[in-house]
Amino acid sequence: MKYILSVVLLLALIAIAESRWHGHHRHRHHRHLEKLHSKQRERDHTSRNMEWDFFMLVTEWPFSSCEKENATHQHECVIPDIVDGWVLHGLWPSCNNGKYPATCTQEKFDFSKVEDLNDRLMKYWPNLFADESKTSFWKHEYEKHGTCAETVQGFETDHDFFKVTLDLRDKYDMGRVLSDQGITPRVIPYKGADVKKAIDNGLTKKGCATCQKVKGVDGYVLMSTTVCLSKSLQLIDCPYCEQECYDNDAVYYQPMN
Image 1 (cartoon, helix red, strand yellow):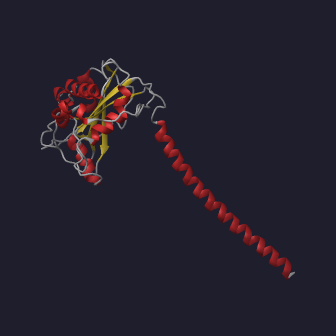
Image 2 (cartoon, rainbow, N blue to C red):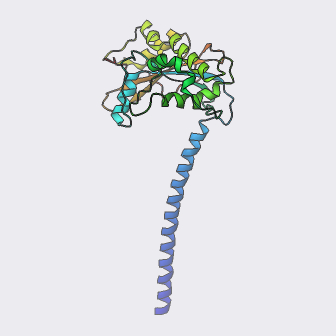
Image 3 (tube, rainbow, N blue to C red):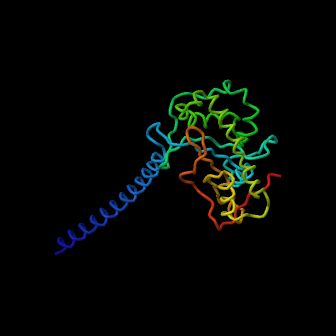
């Protein structure tokens, strides 16, 4: 009888141990799948080939950019004295399905090829991160996005890419677009709907206004805007917007000084 009880007890202990081992194994396996899915989402956001449909011209309000970065302490963000308006983030070849091509060739950024554009780049396409070199942002944007634009006439060289992008920023100066519609920097927030309407009316096409939460701000902050262009650089309605301002949200478009 004692022998039978011992055997039963031993089998019970083995079953409990096995159950705990499988539970731990499933937990580790689940976390591993989460990482895999996360990486898959990153991969899915980029196209697997160089085919794309339109350009996104993205500009940022530097006050908002630095407000966000300095609140998170990820970078020391400083607005150069020469900057007095909206600055470029980039010109991005994009797909209608939300994906985009990236790093389409192995060509590397060479500042000497765009050195004649330095003054315009410093004013309208600066690196706001004081802990990085001034050219690192241009290098990133060209190698990731500019190399994918080279299949379009007028973008055959890196100089073409930067000059055309700077010219587009001047043509669709978001500070002017917004002010012409009565939206100017102020300490009082706007409604998200009014900001979006101003952009669409000013462009006569559907653009994008991106808003984000920033620590210490009671509402949302206008971070960036997007103008969409065909490959022939004609204005088009943006097929989609990311992190778009909500109509009823309080949106801050604050003065830089």
